[in-house]
Structure formats: structure tokens, C-alpha cells
Length: 540
Ligand SMILES: [Mn+2]
Image 1 (cartoon, rainbow, N blue to C red):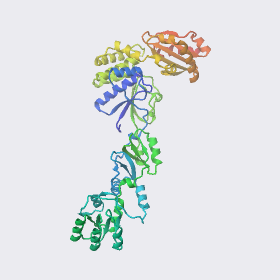
Image 2 (cartoon, helix red, strand yellow):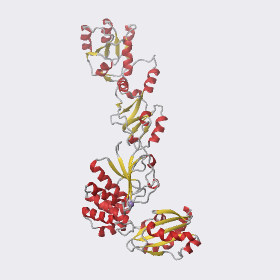
Image 3 (cartoon, rainbow, N blue to C red):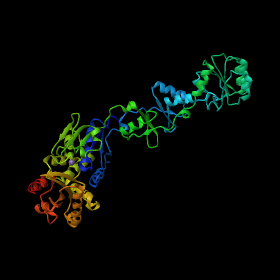
Image 4 (cartoon, rainbow, N blue to C red):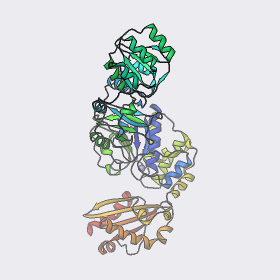
């Protein structure tokens, strides 16, 4: 994903043409701009299409449930800091990059918390002034860097977990409390420096730029005490040591998280309800991906899409109203889609969208790969029922010839095989069978539903006639239509068997007492059936 990705997507309940034209058009456009176009689908691949994809060894387009903007569409701040980094360094980074929050990760890039301005301020204010300043284990080098100090003597590489003493009160009191892990901050007082070294202090921090004498250095070496010299005053040294605590000790762990696939709408809700006014984007294993804030969410983002094989909102992928439609290629009647911007729109009344895509390859003087040619051929053969539907045009025949040549496939042999795969009717529940491809019409004040089921023989409709009639009546009531028709179209015999459910007048007038009624030459719902039966409703 990314901001320049363009999705090419067909309609809901995709058919072979819808899936294959998308694969073809993505290949053509990626020819000029590799990787920019992604073939997508918004529904399950049907058995016929699966057969085509398997035959030509191609993966199905990626499934996309919605094209509304998601977190993946906005730029993320990907910075993060490891949990053992001293807080003072985290704060410095936040200052440098003007960040209000810094995600904190462990060694595996897993998100473990957040250091926020809010959290920093609170941890600083909350610190009990009576509490003894202490040190967590850290390399001497780190302490030297934080204190901007010169390492005069390095006795050990790391300091342990000790307390920090500022030696301004009576020396003997301090000495009596010291343990070997403690460190002491001292000023320009050589007797005190020497006394602390011989008491076995882990490190001596000589503040305010005080000189470090030869005797002190020799004593420190002899006793194994480290010596740091800094120009900071004692108070600043104490303050900086308290800020040297690692991020994990002051970070907050109740970080709101979102995922890349979450909608921006959802992410906005999470961010505005968060006390940090931010959310971290994490992966499946909670690995840190980035940070979003109110500022990043202000950007207007849209997914860019090219619609193939449909031109109506009702058939399009969810979230289409929020997407940027760049182009539409279709061969169906014009539906009601309106766009804010001008859009490339190609509607050609040919048999399939795959035909149009094949022509685009020819126009661009680019040859599809044999696999893609095979898939586009599948799209043409499927939508035209192997050139038998009345919607078939000479352009479809030419496209099929061109594609078959590249794919090395005989359409007369492959076509019927493909169609049969889509006609395994016994596997489907009757309701699904009768609602899979339905269209609603309004004819002379009556609401009509016409379902069409493509078959390779009349046997199915004949043997299941009673069940089909009962299911049709049930569907007619459930959908609240006056008349519900079902066409079982035999693509190899060029005829359809008609079933109908409706009121007495309707059934009698249309002479549908004995069902199914064989309608010779009726292959297309819109070109054959509606013109023939539609008029009869005028007199009802
Ligand atoms: Mn189509």
C-alpha cells in the first residue's frame, strides 16, 4: 500500500469478466508504471472464475472489503526509541523533531509504551524531594555523556544500582551510609574527595569544573573508583542523573493503538479520546509501525480507484462514496454514479469488459502475457456465453481470436468447459441460486424481479421444478414484488425455461399455468425477455 497506489476493482459478487478484466487492466497500466496499480475484488471468487484462475495459474486479485480511507493511506511518523535509552535522550529527540510523544519499543520492535510530554512533566513533578536520588545500572560512559563530563578514571565499565549523595553536609554522616554501588557528587574539596574514595565509593563526580588532583587520581585507581569531572553544578548533576533513568521507567503503557487497516474515521475517534491525543499504529504481533496524531489526521486522503465492469454505486465496493474514482470502464447500461471531478469514462456496448481491455492492449501496442490473455479470453467467453448471447458483438469475436492466439487456447473447447464450471447448480441452496443474479424492474406500475440462472442443460430445472416454484413464491413475498420470474437459460440450446410467481391475474394473463415454460431464443434478460414480456404488463 501507499499513497500512490491505485486499485482497479470490479463489482460486488464478481463474475469472471469482472475479475479477469481487472487483472488484465492492471497488467496493462503497470506496464508503463510498474507496481502502481493493484488488481482488487470486493467479493468471493465464484467456481467458474476459480477454474479460469487455476487454468492460467494466476492468483485472484486482492480482496478489499471497503475503499474508505484507512490508516494505511496517511503518512506515519515512524520514529521510535528503545526502552533502555535514558529519558534525557528521549526528551532531546522529542525536542529535535518537535514531537509531543515518543513510542518506546523493546529489542524486537514491539511497542511497549509511550514517553509523552505530559508523562515527562508529571514524572518530574511527582518526584518526592525527600526521596534519595538513585542510579540505575548504566555504563559509566553514558553517565559521562549525560553529565557532559570528562572521564578521568574509569575503574569499571558499568555502574550498579546505587544511591547518589551530594556531599555538602558533614562528611562523616555521608561516609557512614555509603555502600560500594553508591556514587558521590563533590565540589572543590580534596580531603572530602579522598575520604570518599577510601570509603569505597563506586564513582566520584567532581562538579563545578573543580580541578582533579594527582593524589585523587592515584587513590581512585588504587581503590577502583571511577572519577568524572564536569562543569555542571551539583544541583544540575543531580537533576541530570534523575533524567538518566531509562525510558521504560517513566513511559506510560496504556497507549491507544490502531492498525493499518482501520478506517480513518475509527482512528480519529481513538486519537481524540486519548489523553495523549495520539495513537500508535501496530501490526499483528504489536510491532510498532508508526504514530498518528491529530495533525496527521487532518489531511484529506482518499483511496484512488478505477472501476471496471460496473458503473453504479449499488454494485460498487463499500466506501466508494469516499474514494477518488479516476476512471470507469464498462459495457452495461448507464447507472447513477456521480463524481465531483471529471472522470475518464469508457462505456462500450460490447459483450464484456474483457473485450474493451483487450482492445486497450492492442491500442497501446502492448501484448498481454499468455496467462493474462487466457484470463481475458475467459472474461469474454463467460460474459457472452461462448459468443452465444445476443449481447455478443463482432468486437468480442475479434478480441477472443486475438486473445486465444496469445494464450494458445481453443475457445470452442475451453469455453464450454469454463461455462460448465459455473453451472454446478446442485451445490447451491435454491434461494442463493434464485437471488444470485436478479434485477428489479418497474413496468407499468408493477414491480418485477427477474432472476437468471445460466445452465448447460434443461435437466436441472425440470427435475427441481416443484422446489423452484415454492422458493419463487417465498422470495416474491419476502422481497415484496408483484411478480418474480426466474429464467433458467440453457446456453447450449439457445433457449430458456421460465418460472414465475405472482397473483392469479398475472399468471393467467401471461399463460404461465404450466411451468416451466420453454422460451425459444430467449437468452438475454434485457434484450429478449423484457421486450417480449414487458408489454404484456401494460394490459394487466
Ligand atoms: Mn461484464
